[in-house]
Amino acid sequence: MSKASLSKHMKEDLNSVPDETANAGPYITISRQFGCHGFSVGLLLLDLLNEGADPDESWKIYHREILTRLATETDLAEDILERQRRARPRLLTGLLKSVGKGRLPSGMQIRNQITTIIRGLAIDGRAIIIGQGGSGAAMDLPNGISVRLEAPEDWRVKQVAFRDGLSETQARMRIRAKERERTYLRKLYQAKYRRKPAFNLMYDCSEFSLAQIAQQIVYALKLKGFIPKR
Image 1 (spheres, rainbow, N blue to C red):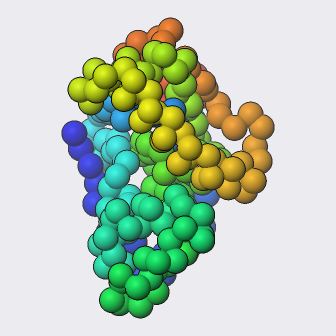
Image 2 (cartoon, rainbow, N blue to C red; image 1 turned 90 degrees about the vertical axis):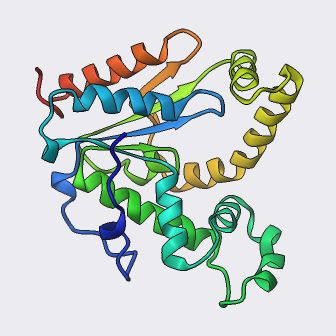
Image 3 (cartoon, rainbow, N blue to C red; image 1 turned 30 degrees about the vertical axis):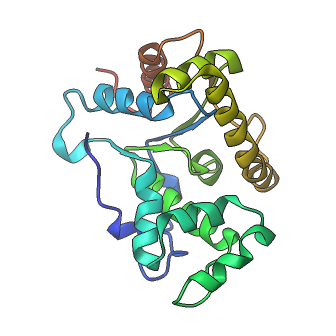
């Protein structure tokens, strides 16, 4: 799996993004319900897109690396940044006392910095961005495709139970807990990014295999002229 360093996207001023939006992409953003294997689809896309590609034209995949890099640059623990990004402002005020190097950045500041990183990656192109609000962050940039993966809860319960070694009851509880966590973020992104429909492509993962979904996304990139037909 090929991954690029994010250092060039994390300058001292994280709000500074090159004014090259007209030449953005190509890029793919993948949003998914919990249990829909978004990262696995990303890995399949990586293999398909890099097959026969020159090394200097290879695609990269980004997921947790974005938050990990932000944690390194801000000298804060990744789990704290993630909780701060997801939680309502009033829920984490107690964490301020546990951080010895000053106040935590607000959830809004963290989300804005992540948005800046994502936009930089999309502008540079050949980026597969999993989650992290990527679809909303890049929605106004050309030459990209936004994908949403969903599936019925019962199907996702079986996937999570098998993947994580849980009973189906435990898996269902985990899925519903994750959905509650994401409700706040989803409302924020829907308020800020009002594009309708929110995604270019939507898939029911219970009806298509991950390989089929990846192949269809590559085909869509070719149809749009974002990558050469070969």
